Structure formats: structure tokens, C-alpha cells
Image (tube, rainbow, N blue to C red; front, top):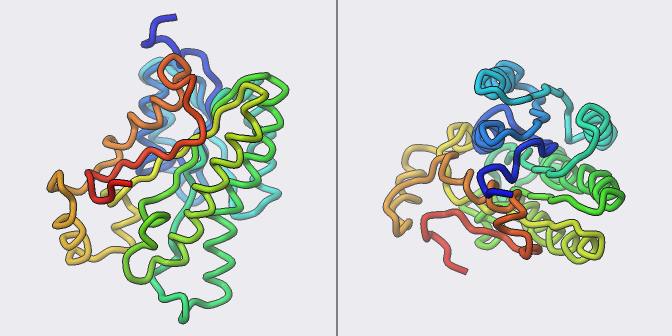
Length: 256
């Protein structure tokens, strides 16, 4: 099969697809003919715009709402996606946020619960069910979104978020080992400082400029800069022998 057609007809579930990186990934996958579930929680307009763009380009997109910080809603999302698409070839776990900058010593119990329930819980419960589905299929790919903060501990006030992303990086490797005998791959993408609504909420201009000064390529990243890594990991013709890896997309800011 030509590389350009390798994603055509694939059933892809993108968790957290209403803006930023998830939206950019959905647009690219849709342009390549994938059959998409575009997930959102609090941004129906953004998700709707993504779905309409995919459909306008001739693709297939199904909107699904769920609060994936809730394990029951996460399970329902995966079940509904499987029922709608008939199978799940690719799961992209992209939901996550920081819930404010705070030192660990100042973090509240609610902040702890919120960060872990969304950033860890959504990945764990979606992957657990999708992994079972993919095992039965004998094929599939899970792609998790981790972060540069998983390696560095994050910038001031982001340590709890970075720690949660450390879990995401590690469970990616666990999934890779456990699912490999069933023909299922698991990998992750670790964005650096990307100009998305995430940083509009949590980073000042001064913080972003300080980060830019540490990036060898001399600029902050964009959501589109990240898309190719997801596309590569979803495409068996390009990455069929790659599993358990974390691709760093950070302009050289961290070189593991």
C-alpha cells in the first residue's frame, strides 16, 4: 500500500481534539482519509469546527463529548467510538492540562486530584479498554501525549503536571511491552513549548520568551510542528517496527 494511503479508512479516536495539537492531528489524519472520532469536553465550538473542516475535505468525523477526568465517561467514550467506527485502529490520548501553576508544597488536594484524574486517568482508562479491543483485532496503535516536563520536572509551578506526564511516558513503555505480542504498538509524543491555548492560559509572555531563548531552533513550536510525529507513529508503513518510544518535539531544547 502506498504510504500516502496507509491511514485511509483507519478508525482513529483522538481524545482532546477540540484545539491545539489534537485539533491539528485530527485535521491531518482526516485529510489522509482516516475515519475520526473527534472528542471534546468543554469546547464544542472548537471540536465542531475541526469536524466540519475534516468533512469539507471529504473525510469522516464523529463528534463525541466526554469528561475524561471521569473514568466512567472515559470508558463510555471508547465504547461509543468502537460502536460507531466498528473498530479502533489508532487511539491518540491527548487530553490534559495543568490546573494552574503551583509549587508542590502549595498544591491543594483538589489540584492533585484534578491533575491526576485528567492527565493520568484519561490515558489509563482509555488505553485499558482500547488495548483490549486492539488485542482482539490483532493490530492497533496507541499514541500518548506526554511532555518535555516529564524529563525536566517542568518550569516553576508545573512540577505536579510534569510528574503526571512522567507516568504517561512510563505507562507508554509498559503498554508497548504488554501489547506487543498481540500486534499492538504504543508510543508517545513529548511536545516542548508549543503555542497553543495551554500556554495562553498558564504562561506569561516573559515566561515564553525565557523559554524561547533556550531553544536551539530559536522559536517556540506550533501545533502543526507536532503533527508529523503522530502521523509517523500511526502509519504502520513508516513505524511498524517502532514501539515503546517517546518522540521529543521541542526544537532542541532538551536532547535526551
